Length: 313
Length: 95
Length: 113
Length: 97
Image (tube, rainbow over all chains, first blue to last red; front, side, top):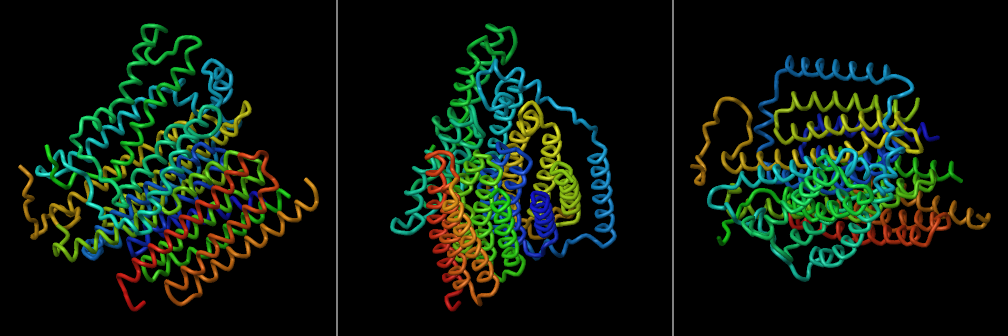
Protein backbone atom coordinates (compact mmCIF):
# COMPACT_ATOMS: atom_id res chain seq x y z
CA UNK A 1 0.00 0.00 0.00
CA UNK A 2 2.71 2.47 0.99
CA UNK A 3 4.72 1.58 -2.12
CA UNK A 4 1.75 2.33 -4.38
CA UNK A 5 1.19 5.68 -2.66
CA UNK A 6 4.86 6.60 -3.04
CA UNK A 7 4.95 5.55 -6.69
CA UNK A 8 1.84 7.62 -7.41
CA UNK A 9 3.35 10.60 -5.62
CA UNK A 10 6.61 10.31 -7.60
CA UNK A 11 4.71 10.07 -10.90
CA UNK A 12 2.62 13.12 -10.03
CA UNK A 13 5.76 15.06 -9.13
CA UNK A 14 7.31 14.19 -12.47
CA UNK A 15 4.15 15.05 -14.39
CA UNK A 16 3.84 18.44 -12.70
CA UNK A 17 7.54 19.20 -13.18
CA UNK A 18 7.26 18.30 -16.87
CA UNK A 19 4.22 20.56 -17.15
CA UNK A 20 6.09 23.39 -15.44
CA UNK A 21 8.97 23.02 -17.89
CA UNK A 22 7.25 22.45 -21.25
CA UNK A 23 3.84 24.08 -20.76
CA UNK A 24 3.10 26.88 -23.19
CA UNK A 25 1.39 29.36 -20.90
CA UNK A 26 3.62 30.91 -18.22
CA UNK A 27 0.84 31.33 -15.66
CA UNK A 28 -0.19 27.70 -16.07
CA UNK A 29 3.42 26.72 -15.47
CA UNK A 30 3.54 28.76 -12.25
CA UNK A 31 0.21 27.30 -11.05
CA UNK A 32 1.67 23.87 -11.76
CA UNK A 33 4.74 24.79 -9.72
CA UNK A 34 2.60 25.81 -6.74
CA UNK A 35 0.88 22.42 -6.86
CA UNK A 36 4.30 20.77 -7.27
CA UNK A 37 5.54 22.44 -4.07
CA UNK A 38 2.58 21.02 -2.18
CA UNK A 39 3.22 17.47 -3.41
CA UNK A 40 6.86 17.88 -2.50
CA UNK A 41 5.70 18.46 1.09
CA UNK A 42 4.03 15.04 1.02
CA UNK A 43 7.19 13.49 -0.43
CA UNK A 44 9.22 14.91 2.47
CA UNK A 45 6.84 13.32 4.96
CA UNK A 46 7.30 10.00 3.16
CA UNK A 47 11.08 10.40 3.42
CA UNK A 48 10.81 10.90 7.22
CA UNK A 49 11.86 14.52 6.95
CA UNK A 50 9.02 16.23 8.80
CA UNK A 51 11.21 19.24 9.57
CA UNK A 52 11.97 19.58 5.87
CA UNK A 53 8.28 19.09 5.03
CA UNK A 54 7.43 21.94 7.37
CA UNK A 55 9.98 24.20 5.67
CA UNK A 56 8.73 23.21 2.22
CA UNK A 57 5.11 23.81 3.28
CA UNK A 58 5.92 27.30 4.54
CA UNK A 59 8.38 28.43 1.84
CA UNK A 60 7.35 26.35 -1.17
CA UNK A 61 3.62 26.43 -0.47
CA UNK A 62 3.45 30.04 0.60
CA UNK A 63 6.24 32.45 -0.29
CA UNK A 64 7.69 31.05 -3.52
CA UNK A 65 4.24 30.63 -5.07
CA UNK A 66 3.23 34.20 -4.21
CA UNK A 67 6.56 35.56 -5.51
CA UNK A 68 6.27 33.78 -8.86
CA UNK A 69 2.57 34.55 -9.33
CA UNK A 70 3.28 38.23 -8.77
CA UNK A 71 6.13 38.13 -11.29
CA UNK A 72 4.22 36.24 -13.97
CA UNK A 73 1.31 38.69 -13.79
CA UNK A 74 3.67 41.64 -14.34
CA UNK A 75 5.53 39.94 -17.18
CA UNK A 76 2.43 38.92 -19.13
CA UNK A 77 3.27 41.13 -22.11
CA UNK A 78 6.73 39.62 -22.60
CA UNK A 79 5.66 36.04 -23.27
CA UNK A 80 4.96 36.38 -27.01
CA UNK A 81 8.35 37.96 -27.68
CA UNK A 82 10.12 35.23 -25.73
CA UNK A 83 8.33 32.52 -27.69
CA UNK A 84 9.87 33.90 -30.87
CA UNK A 85 13.31 33.33 -29.35
CA UNK A 86 12.73 29.64 -28.88
CA UNK A 87 15.97 27.81 -29.63
CA UNK A 88 16.29 25.71 -32.79
CA UNK A 89 15.36 22.05 -32.80
CA UNK A 90 19.03 21.08 -32.84
CA UNK A 91 19.74 23.10 -29.68
CA UNK A 92 16.72 21.60 -27.95
CA UNK A 93 17.75 18.08 -28.93
CA UNK A 94 21.24 18.69 -27.60
CA UNK A 95 19.79 20.12 -24.38
CA UNK A 96 17.59 17.05 -24.02
CA UNK A 97 20.61 14.79 -24.58
CA UNK A 98 22.68 16.64 -21.96
CA UNK A 99 19.81 16.58 -19.48
CA UNK A 100 19.20 12.90 -20.19
CA UNK A 101 22.87 12.08 -19.68
CA UNK A 102 22.92 13.92 -16.34
CA UNK A 103 19.81 12.03 -15.23
CA UNK A 104 21.24 8.66 -16.23
CA UNK A 105 24.57 9.37 -14.52
CA UNK A 106 22.80 10.45 -11.30
CA UNK A 107 20.44 7.47 -11.43
CA UNK A 108 23.38 5.08 -11.76
CA UNK A 109 25.10 6.69 -8.80
CA UNK A 110 21.88 6.51 -6.73
CA UNK A 111 21.59 2.79 -7.46
CA UNK A 112 25.28 2.28 -6.70
CA UNK A 113 25.19 3.96 -3.29
CA UNK A 114 26.99 1.86 -0.66
CA UNK A 115 24.97 -0.36 1.63
CA UNK A 116 24.81 0.15 4.59
CA UNK A 117 24.66 3.86 3.91
CA UNK A 118 27.19 6.14 5.59
CA UNK A 119 25.43 8.16 8.25
CA UNK A 120 26.12 10.68 10.94
CA UNK A 121 22.93 9.79 12.83
CA UNK A 122 24.74 7.80 15.59
CA UNK A 123 27.17 10.71 16.14
CA UNK A 124 24.24 13.10 16.45
CA UNK A 125 22.48 10.72 18.84
CA UNK A 126 25.65 10.38 20.94
CA UNK A 127 26.20 14.12 21.28
CA UNK A 128 22.69 15.55 21.33
CA UNK A 129 22.59 15.28 25.11
CA UNK A 130 25.25 17.98 25.41
CA UNK A 131 23.09 20.51 23.55
CA UNK A 132 20.01 20.11 25.74
CA UNK A 133 17.63 20.18 22.77
CA UNK A 134 15.53 17.19 21.76
CA UNK A 135 15.15 17.81 18.04
CA UNK A 136 18.25 16.49 16.24
CA UNK A 137 17.76 18.94 13.34
CA UNK A 138 17.85 21.89 15.72
CA UNK A 139 20.95 20.44 17.35
CA UNK A 140 22.65 20.21 13.95
CA UNK A 141 21.53 23.67 12.85
CA UNK A 142 22.54 25.51 16.01
CA UNK A 143 25.26 23.44 17.62
CA UNK A 144 27.06 20.93 15.39
CA UNK A 145 26.91 23.00 12.21
CA UNK A 146 26.08 26.41 13.62
CA UNK A 147 28.54 28.03 11.19
CA UNK A 148 26.28 27.02 8.25
CA UNK A 149 23.29 28.63 9.89
CA UNK A 150 25.21 31.81 10.67
CA UNK A 151 26.44 32.10 7.09
CA UNK A 152 22.94 31.40 5.80
CA UNK A 153 21.52 34.27 7.83
CA UNK A 154 24.22 36.51 6.38
CA UNK A 155 23.48 35.27 2.84
CA UNK A 156 19.86 36.27 3.37
CA UNK A 157 20.91 39.79 4.40
CA UNK A 158 23.08 40.02 1.26
CA UNK A 159 20.23 38.80 -0.93
CA UNK A 160 18.01 41.54 0.45
CA UNK A 161 20.74 44.15 -0.13
CA UNK A 162 20.97 42.80 -3.68
CA UNK A 163 17.22 43.18 -4.21
CA UNK A 164 17.21 46.68 -2.75
CA UNK A 165 20.16 47.76 -4.86
CA UNK A 166 17.96 47.31 -7.93
CA UNK A 167 15.97 50.39 -6.95
CA UNK A 168 15.99 53.30 -9.40
CA UNK A 169 17.90 56.28 -7.97
CA UNK A 170 14.79 58.33 -7.30
CA UNK A 171 13.29 55.53 -5.19
CA UNK A 172 16.37 54.74 -3.09
CA UNK A 173 15.47 54.85 0.56
CA UNK A 174 11.79 54.74 -0.33
CA UNK A 175 9.07 52.17 0.10
CA UNK A 176 9.40 48.84 -1.72
CA UNK A 177 6.68 47.23 -3.81
CA UNK A 178 3.51 48.61 -5.31
CA UNK A 179 1.03 50.64 -3.27
CA UNK A 180 -1.88 48.40 -2.29
CA UNK A 181 -5.18 50.19 -2.06
CA UNK A 182 -7.24 49.22 0.96
CA UNK A 183 -10.91 48.39 0.79
CA UNK A 184 -11.70 48.57 4.51
CA UNK A 185 -14.92 46.59 4.18
CA UNK A 186 -13.62 44.07 1.64
CA UNK A 187 -13.07 40.42 2.25
CA UNK A 188 -9.31 40.82 1.86
CA UNK A 189 -9.19 43.36 4.69
CA UNK A 190 -11.33 40.95 6.71
CA UNK A 191 -8.98 37.99 6.37
CA UNK A 192 -6.01 40.30 6.93
CA UNK A 193 -7.52 41.15 10.32
CA UNK A 194 -8.61 37.64 11.30
CA UNK A 195 -5.74 35.49 10.12
CA UNK A 196 -2.61 37.27 11.48
CA UNK A 197 -3.40 36.78 15.20
CA UNK A 198 -3.89 33.06 14.57
CA UNK A 199 -0.82 33.01 12.35
CA UNK A 200 1.35 34.67 14.99
CA UNK A 201 0.29 32.08 17.57
CA UNK A 202 0.94 29.22 15.14
CA UNK A 203 4.27 30.72 14.08
CA UNK A 204 5.42 31.08 17.68
CA UNK A 205 4.18 27.57 18.44
CA UNK A 206 6.13 26.08 15.50
CA UNK A 207 9.17 28.07 16.62
CA UNK A 208 8.89 26.91 20.22
CA UNK A 209 8.15 23.30 19.30
CA UNK A 210 11.40 23.28 17.31
CA UNK A 211 13.48 22.61 20.42
CA UNK A 212 12.11 19.11 20.86
CA UNK A 213 9.81 18.37 17.89
CA UNK A 214 9.83 19.23 14.20
CA UNK A 215 9.73 23.01 13.80
CA UNK A 216 12.06 25.89 14.40
CA UNK A 217 12.93 29.45 13.61
CA UNK A 218 12.92 29.19 9.78
CA UNK A 219 9.43 27.76 9.62
CA UNK A 220 8.10 30.06 12.34
CA UNK A 221 9.70 33.11 10.71
CA UNK A 222 8.23 32.19 7.33
CA UNK A 223 4.75 32.05 8.82
CA UNK A 224 5.23 35.42 10.51
CA UNK A 225 6.55 36.88 7.24
CA UNK A 226 3.49 35.57 5.38
CA UNK A 227 1.17 37.18 7.93
CA UNK A 228 2.91 40.55 7.57
CA UNK A 229 2.71 40.25 3.78
CA UNK A 230 -1.00 39.51 4.04
CA UNK A 231 -1.58 42.72 6.00
CA UNK A 232 0.48 44.63 3.42
CA UNK A 233 -1.36 43.10 0.45
CA UNK A 234 -4.69 44.03 2.02
CA UNK A 235 -3.46 47.64 2.17
CA UNK A 236 -3.92 47.82 5.95
CA UNK A 237 -0.29 48.80 6.36
CA UNK A 238 2.43 49.85 3.96
CA UNK A 239 5.90 48.44 3.55
CA UNK A 240 8.36 50.53 5.59
CA UNK A 241 10.79 52.80 3.69
CA UNK A 242 14.08 50.95 3.52
CA UNK A 243 15.93 53.89 5.06
CA UNK A 244 14.23 53.41 8.43
CA UNK A 245 16.74 52.90 11.22
CA UNK A 246 14.63 50.34 13.13
CA UNK A 247 14.32 48.27 9.98
CA UNK A 248 18.05 48.22 9.28
CA UNK A 249 18.86 47.41 12.90
CA UNK A 250 16.29 44.60 12.80
CA UNK A 251 17.83 43.17 9.66
CA UNK A 252 21.29 42.76 11.17
CA UNK A 253 20.36 42.18 14.83
CA UNK A 254 19.98 38.40 14.48
CA UNK A 255 23.32 37.72 12.78
CA UNK A 256 25.08 40.19 15.13
CA UNK A 257 23.78 38.40 18.24
CA UNK A 258 24.83 35.10 16.63
CA UNK A 259 28.35 36.42 15.95
CA UNK A 260 28.60 37.94 19.44
CA UNK A 261 27.71 34.63 21.07
CA UNK A 262 30.16 32.90 18.72
CA UNK A 263 32.96 35.26 19.79
CA UNK A 264 32.02 34.84 23.44
CA UNK A 265 32.35 31.11 22.87
CA UNK A 266 35.84 31.65 21.47
CA UNK A 267 36.78 33.32 24.75
CA UNK A 268 34.85 31.14 27.20
CA UNK A 269 34.93 27.73 25.54
CA UNK A 270 37.96 27.85 23.30
CA UNK A 271 36.44 27.93 19.81
CA UNK A 272 34.27 30.24 17.70
CA UNK A 273 30.61 29.22 18.18
CA UNK A 274 31.49 26.76 20.94
CA UNK A 275 29.09 26.79 23.89
CA UNK A 276 30.38 26.51 27.48
CA UNK A 277 29.22 23.35 29.29
CA UNK A 278 25.68 23.65 30.57
CA UNK A 279 24.93 26.86 28.70
CA UNK A 280 24.21 25.28 25.32
CA UNK A 281 20.42 25.27 25.46
CA UNK A 282 19.92 28.82 26.81
CA UNK A 283 22.40 30.16 24.23
CA UNK A 284 20.67 28.27 21.42
CA UNK A 285 17.34 29.76 22.48
CA UNK A 286 18.83 33.27 22.63
CA UNK A 287 20.25 32.85 19.11
CA UNK A 288 16.96 31.50 17.77
CA UNK A 289 14.96 34.28 19.45
CA UNK A 290 17.30 36.88 17.94
CA UNK A 291 17.30 35.30 14.48
CA UNK A 292 13.56 34.84 14.16
CA UNK A 293 12.49 38.52 13.78
CA UNK A 294 15.43 39.12 11.42
CA UNK A 295 14.46 36.15 9.27
CA UNK A 296 10.80 37.18 9.22
CA UNK A 297 11.71 40.73 8.13
CA UNK A 298 14.10 39.51 5.43
CA UNK A 299 11.79 36.83 4.00
CA UNK A 300 8.87 39.25 3.78
CA UNK A 301 10.90 42.07 2.25
CA UNK A 302 12.58 39.74 -0.26
CA UNK A 303 9.11 39.02 -1.58
CA UNK A 304 8.04 42.67 -1.62
CA UNK A 305 10.98 43.50 -3.87
CA UNK A 306 13.00 46.58 -4.73
CA UNK A 307 12.01 50.07 -3.58
CA UNK A 308 9.77 51.67 -6.20
CA UNK A 309 8.31 54.74 -4.55
CA UNK A 310 10.36 57.76 -3.54
CA UNK A 311 10.44 58.03 0.24
CA UNK A 312 10.74 60.94 2.59
CA UNK A 313 14.38 61.02 3.58
CA UNK B 1 -7.32 0.75 10.38
CA UNK B 2 -3.94 2.05 9.24
CA UNK B 3 -4.36 0.41 5.84
CA UNK B 4 -7.79 1.98 5.46
CA UNK B 5 -6.45 5.45 6.29
CA UNK B 6 -3.57 4.95 3.89
CA UNK B 7 -5.96 3.91 1.13
CA UNK B 8 -8.18 6.91 1.84
CA UNK B 9 -5.11 9.16 1.66
CA UNK B 10 -4.18 7.69 -1.71
CA UNK B 11 -7.75 8.08 -2.97
CA UNK B 12 -7.97 11.76 -2.00
CA UNK B 13 -4.59 12.37 -3.61
CA UNK B 14 -5.73 10.62 -6.78
CA UNK B 15 -8.90 12.74 -6.88
CA UNK B 16 -7.09 16.04 -6.66
CA UNK B 17 -4.50 14.77 -9.13
CA UNK B 18 -7.31 14.23 -11.62
CA UNK B 19 -8.57 17.71 -10.76
CA UNK B 20 -5.17 19.03 -11.77
CA UNK B 21 -6.25 18.54 -15.37
CA UNK B 22 -7.85 21.98 -14.85
CA UNK B 23 -4.37 23.46 -14.56
CA UNK B 24 -3.61 22.00 -17.96
CA UNK B 25 -6.88 22.95 -19.62
CA UNK B 26 -7.55 26.33 -18.04
CA UNK B 27 -9.03 28.13 -19.89
CA UNK B 28 -8.63 31.14 -17.58
CA UNK B 29 -6.02 31.90 -14.95
CA UNK B 30 -8.80 31.77 -12.33
CA UNK B 31 -9.56 28.15 -13.23
CA UNK B 32 -5.91 27.23 -12.86
CA UNK B 33 -5.74 28.99 -9.49
CA UNK B 34 -8.81 27.05 -8.36
CA UNK B 35 -7.25 23.74 -9.29
CA UNK B 36 -4.20 24.67 -7.20
CA UNK B 37 -6.54 25.64 -4.33
CA UNK B 38 -8.30 22.26 -4.53
CA UNK B 39 -4.97 20.51 -4.50
CA UNK B 40 -4.12 22.48 -1.37
CA UNK B 41 -7.20 21.26 0.48
CA UNK B 42 -6.80 17.72 -0.82
CA UNK B 43 -3.12 17.76 0.10
CA UNK B 44 -4.01 18.77 3.67
CA UNK B 45 -6.57 15.95 3.88
CA UNK B 46 -4.13 13.41 2.41
CA UNK B 47 -1.43 14.61 4.82
CA UNK B 48 -3.70 14.25 7.86
CA UNK B 49 -4.79 10.76 6.80
CA UNK B 50 -1.18 9.79 6.17
CA UNK B 51 -0.11 11.15 9.55
CA UNK B 52 -2.88 9.20 11.29
CA UNK B 53 -1.96 6.04 9.38
CA UNK B 54 1.73 6.21 10.25
CA UNK B 55 1.28 7.63 13.75
CA UNK B 56 3.60 10.57 13.01
CA UNK B 57 2.07 13.30 15.18
CA UNK B 58 4.17 16.17 13.82
CA UNK B 59 2.53 15.80 10.41
CA UNK B 60 -0.42 17.71 11.91
CA UNK B 61 1.86 20.73 12.30
CA UNK B 62 2.77 20.53 8.61
CA UNK B 63 -0.94 20.44 7.75
CA UNK B 64 -1.51 23.39 10.09
CA UNK B 65 1.14 25.41 8.23
CA UNK B 66 -0.39 24.52 4.88
CA UNK B 67 -3.87 25.45 6.12
CA UNK B 68 -2.63 28.80 7.38
CA UNK B 69 -1.05 29.63 4.03
CA UNK B 70 -3.78 27.98 1.91
CA UNK B 71 -5.24 31.28 0.70
CA UNK B 72 -1.87 32.97 0.32
CA UNK B 73 -1.24 32.04 -3.33
CA UNK B 74 -4.82 32.89 -4.31
CA UNK B 75 -4.59 36.30 -2.63
CA UNK B 76 -1.26 36.98 -4.34
CA UNK B 77 -2.91 35.99 -7.62
CA UNK B 78 -5.85 38.37 -7.18
CA UNK B 79 -3.60 41.23 -6.03
CA UNK B 80 -1.17 40.66 -8.90
CA UNK B 81 -3.99 40.59 -11.45
CA UNK B 82 -5.46 43.80 -10.01
CA UNK B 83 -2.08 45.59 -9.91
CA UNK B 84 -1.21 44.52 -13.45
CA UNK B 85 -4.54 45.71 -14.89
CA UNK B 86 -4.27 48.99 -12.95
CA UNK B 87 -0.85 49.59 -14.50
CA UNK B 88 -2.26 48.86 -17.93
CA UNK B 89 -5.08 51.35 -17.67
CA UNK B 90 -3.21 54.06 -15.77
CA UNK B 91 0.11 54.40 -17.56
CA UNK B 92 -0.28 52.55 -20.81
CA UNK B 93 2.80 50.36 -20.69
CA UNK B 94 3.16 49.55 -17.04
CA UNK B 95 5.89 52.07 -16.25
CA UNK C 1 11.73 -0.59 -4.06
CA UNK C 2 12.33 1.46 -0.92
CA UNK C 3 11.02 5.01 -0.61
CA UNK C 4 14.59 6.30 -0.64
CA UNK C 5 15.46 4.64 -3.96
CA UNK C 6 12.13 5.58 -5.52
CA UNK C 7 12.34 9.27 -4.62
CA UNK C 8 16.06 9.25 -5.41
CA UNK C 9 15.33 8.13 -8.97
CA UNK C 10 12.43 10.60 -9.16
CA UNK C 11 14.89 13.31 -8.09
CA UNK C 12 17.35 12.45 -10.87
CA UNK C 13 14.56 12.77 -13.45
CA UNK C 14 13.51 16.12 -11.91
CA UNK C 15 17.07 17.39 -12.20
CA UNK C 16 17.16 16.33 -15.85
CA UNK C 17 13.81 17.98 -16.60
CA UNK C 18 14.82 21.20 -14.92
CA UNK C 19 18.19 21.26 -16.68
CA UNK C 20 16.45 20.89 -20.03
CA UNK C 21 14.07 23.75 -19.21
CA UNK C 22 16.95 25.92 -18.05
CA UNK C 23 18.64 25.56 -21.45
CA UNK C 24 15.72 25.27 -23.85
CA UNK C 25 13.17 27.75 -22.50
CA UNK C 26 13.88 31.30 -23.70
CA UNK C 27 11.76 33.20 -21.17
CA UNK C 28 13.83 34.17 -18.11
CA UNK C 29 10.93 33.59 -15.70
CA UNK C 30 10.59 30.06 -17.05
CA UNK C 31 14.33 29.65 -16.54
CA UNK C 32 13.85 30.69 -12.91
CA UNK C 33 11.08 28.08 -12.59
CA UNK C 34 13.36 25.48 -14.18
CA UNK C 35 16.14 26.48 -11.79
CA UNK C 36 13.73 25.83 -8.93
CA UNK C 37 12.84 22.42 -10.35
CA UNK C 38 16.56 21.55 -10.53
CA UNK C 39 16.92 22.82 -6.97
CA UNK C 40 14.04 20.74 -5.66
CA UNK C 41 15.46 17.71 -7.47
CA UNK C 42 18.83 18.19 -5.79
CA UNK C 43 17.11 18.60 -2.43
CA UNK C 44 15.06 15.46 -2.99
CA UNK C 45 18.24 13.58 -3.94
CA UNK C 46 19.90 14.68 -0.71
CA UNK C 47 16.68 13.82 1.14
CA UNK C 48 16.75 10.30 -0.29
CA UNK C 49 20.38 9.96 0.82
CA UNK C 50 19.39 11.26 4.27
CA UNK C 51 16.60 8.65 4.41
CA UNK C 52 19.09 5.88 3.66
CA UNK C 53 21.15 7.08 6.61
CA UNK C 54 18.32 6.41 9.05
CA UNK C 55 19.60 5.07 12.30
CA UNK C 56 20.09 5.62 16.02
CA UNK C 57 16.34 6.13 16.42
CA UNK C 58 16.05 8.85 13.76
CA UNK C 59 13.97 8.40 10.59
CA UNK C 60 16.74 9.95 8.54
CA UNK C 61 20.27 11.27 8.93
CA UNK C 62 19.66 14.65 10.64
CA UNK C 63 22.81 16.32 9.22
CA UNK C 64 21.73 16.32 5.54
CA UNK C 65 18.18 17.11 6.64
CA UNK C 66 19.39 20.22 8.44
CA UNK C 67 21.40 21.20 5.35
CA UNK C 68 18.20 20.80 3.32
CA UNK C 69 16.35 23.31 5.47
CA UNK C 70 19.20 25.77 5.00
CA UNK C 71 19.17 25.01 1.28
CA UNK C 72 15.45 25.58 0.81
CA UNK C 73 15.63 28.98 2.50
CA UNK C 74 18.70 30.03 0.48
CA UNK C 75 17.05 28.82 -2.76
CA UNK C 76 14.09 31.05 -1.96
CA UNK C 77 16.37 34.06 -1.44
CA UNK C 78 18.15 33.33 -4.74
CA UNK C 79 14.79 33.08 -6.51
CA UNK C 80 13.64 36.36 -5.00
CA UNK C 81 16.84 38.07 -6.15
CA UNK C 82 16.48 36.63 -9.67
CA UNK C 83 12.85 37.74 -9.89
CA UNK C 84 13.78 41.24 -8.69
CA UNK C 85 16.53 41.46 -11.35
CA UNK C 86 14.08 40.33 -14.01
CA UNK C 87 11.38 42.82 -12.99
CA UNK C 88 13.99 45.61 -12.98
CA UNK C 89 15.11 44.61 -16.48
CA UNK C 90 11.49 44.70 -17.58
CA UNK C 91 10.90 48.14 -16.04
CA UNK C 92 14.09 49.54 -17.54
CA UNK C 93 13.91 48.13 -21.06
CA UNK C 94 10.30 47.05 -21.55
CA UNK C 95 11.45 43.57 -22.51
CA UNK C 96 13.08 40.65 -20.78
CA UNK C 97 15.09 39.24 -23.66
CA UNK C 98 18.44 37.68 -22.89
CA UNK C 99 19.53 37.87 -26.55
CA UNK C 100 22.97 39.36 -27.05
CA UNK C 101 21.95 41.98 -29.62
CA UNK C 102 20.33 45.00 -28.01
CA UNK C 103 16.67 45.32 -28.95
CA UNK C 104 15.89 48.59 -30.78
CA UNK C 105 13.27 49.81 -28.32
CA UNK C 106 15.55 50.28 -25.31
CA UNK C 107 14.90 53.53 -23.53
CA UNK C 108 17.53 54.63 -21.03
CA UNK C 109 16.21 54.65 -17.51
CA UNK C 110 15.86 58.08 -15.95
CA UNK C 111 17.44 56.93 -12.72
CA UNK C 112 20.59 55.27 -14.02
CA UNK C 113 23.81 57.29 -13.77
CA UNK D 1 -10.52 1.98 20.32
CA UNK D 2 -14.05 0.70 20.35
CA UNK D 3 -15.69 -0.70 17.26
CA UNK D 4 -18.27 2.09 17.21
CA UNK D 5 -15.59 4.77 17.00
CA UNK D 6 -13.75 2.90 14.27
CA UNK D 7 -16.99 2.61 12.38
CA UNK D 8 -17.63 6.35 12.77
CA UNK D 9 -14.13 7.03 11.44
CA UNK D 10 -14.62 4.82 8.41
CA UNK D 11 -18.03 6.29 7.55
CA UNK D 12 -16.82 9.89 7.96
CA UNK D 13 -13.59 9.39 6.00
CA UNK D 14 -15.41 7.60 3.17
CA UNK D 15 -18.00 10.38 3.05
CA UNK D 16 -15.19 12.97 3.03
CA UNK D 17 -13.42 11.15 0.21
CA UNK D 18 -16.72 11.16 -1.69
CA UNK D 19 -16.88 14.95 -1.48
CA UNK D 20 -13.34 15.20 -2.83
CA UNK D 21 -14.51 13.02 -5.70
CA UNK D 22 -17.52 15.31 -6.19
CA UNK D 23 -15.32 18.41 -6.07
CA UNK D 24 -13.00 16.98 -8.69
CA UNK D 25 -15.83 15.94 -10.99
CA UNK D 26 -17.37 19.38 -10.62
CA UNK D 27 -14.07 21.11 -11.27
CA UNK D 28 -13.66 19.12 -14.45
CA UNK D 29 -17.22 18.94 -15.75
CA UNK D 30 -18.98 22.18 -14.78
CA UNK D 31 -19.29 24.67 -17.63
CA UNK D 32 -17.85 27.95 -16.25
CA UNK D 33 -15.65 29.46 -13.57
CA UNK D 34 -18.44 30.26 -11.10
CA UNK D 35 -20.06 26.83 -11.08
CA UNK D 36 -16.62 25.30 -10.77
CA UNK D 37 -15.95 27.49 -7.73
CA UNK D 38 -19.17 26.14 -6.24
CA UNK D 39 -17.93 22.57 -6.70
CA UNK D 40 -14.56 23.44 -5.22
CA UNK D 41 -15.95 24.81 -1.97
CA UNK D 42 -17.80 21.56 -1.31
CA UNK D 43 -14.50 19.72 -1.19
CA UNK D 44 -13.09 22.40 1.14
CA UNK D 45 -16.01 22.48 3.55
CA UNK D 46 -17.40 18.99 3.65
CA UNK D 47 -14.59 16.87 2.30
CA UNK D 48 -11.95 18.06 4.72
CA UNK D 49 -14.54 18.53 7.49
CA UNK D 50 -15.62 14.91 7.33
CA UNK D 51 -12.04 13.66 7.12
CA UNK D 52 -11.21 15.69 10.24
CA UNK D 53 -14.31 14.32 11.97
CA UNK D 54 -13.22 10.81 11.09
CA UNK D 55 -9.72 11.37 12.46
CA UNK D 56 -10.83 12.95 15.76
CA UNK D 57 -11.37 9.60 17.58
CA UNK D 58 -7.76 8.66 16.80
CA UNK D 59 -5.93 11.65 18.20
CA UNK D 60 -3.69 11.07 21.19
CA UNK D 61 -4.30 14.32 23.05
CA UNK D 62 -6.75 17.19 23.35
CA UNK D 63 -4.16 19.53 21.79
CA UNK D 64 -3.90 17.34 18.69
CA UNK D 65 -7.70 17.29 18.36
CA UNK D 66 -7.81 21.05 18.74
CA UNK D 67 -5.18 21.39 16.01
CA UNK D 68 -7.27 19.26 13.65
CA UNK D 69 -10.32 21.47 14.23
CA UNK D 70 -8.25 24.63 13.78
CA UNK D 71 -6.93 23.25 10.48
CA UNK D 72 -10.47 22.72 9.27
CA UNK D 73 -11.57 26.21 10.36
CA UNK D 74 -8.53 27.78 8.68
CA UNK D 75 -9.25 25.97 5.43
CA UNK D 76 -12.91 27.04 5.63
CA UNK D 77 -11.82 30.66 6.06
CA UNK D 78 -9.22 30.47 3.30
CA UNK D 79 -11.58 28.69 0.94
CA UNK D 80 -14.34 31.25 1.48
CA UNK D 81 -12.00 34.21 1.01
CA UNK D 82 -10.12 32.74 -1.94
CA UNK D 83 -13.26 31.73 -3.83
CA UNK D 84 -14.89 35.14 -3.32
CA UNK D 85 -11.73 36.94 -4.42
CA UNK D 86 -11.29 34.72 -7.47
CA UNK D 87 -14.96 35.14 -8.43
CA UNK D 88 -14.75 38.92 -8.10
CA UNK D 89 -11.52 39.11 -10.10
CA UNK D 90 -13.07 36.98 -12.84
CA UNK D 91 -16.17 39.15 -12.94
CA UNK D 92 -14.20 42.40 -13.14
CA UNK D 93 -12.18 41.11 -16.04
CA UNK D 94 -15.09 39.55 -17.90
CA UNK D 95 -18.48 40.85 -16.69
CA UNK D 96 -20.51 38.54 -18.93
CA UNK D 97 -18.93 35.32 -17.74
